[in-house]
Length: 135
Image 1 (cartoon, rainbow, N blue to C red):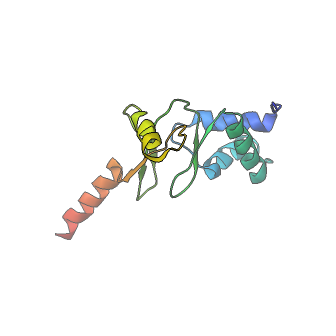
Image 2: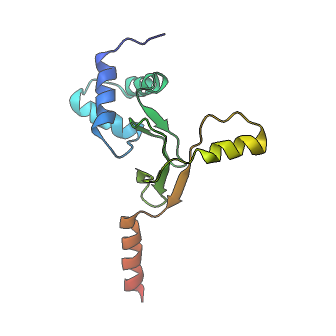
Image 3: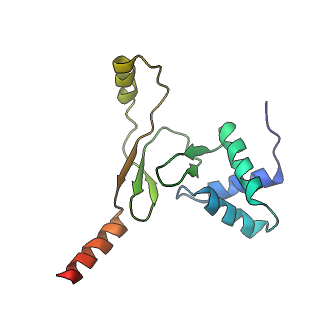
């Protein structure tokens, strides 16, 4: 069943499209509130769910917090364990992993989601700088 487009839904979609940093639902809510201060958190969350169900956005489930994006191609993510920044992995998606999982388990695999965890360049610099001051 096709969902009708509402002004609130367009505001939520525009907020996701305007960002390229994999925003959380709370970040999207803050951005939408800057445009429409009467919109409720529940309305934003419901519209995120509808936009995900209709395939207009992707819901990226991560260890710390769920994020959203509009990028549609298959790709993996990196998350900083310290500041929780999320970015796309700039290497091609490996569909061979899907095939291997099928062969090894008998599951019917549609796709995989791979999340690399580590420290982003900014956090690495901060830690290295802090270590230099300790010595």
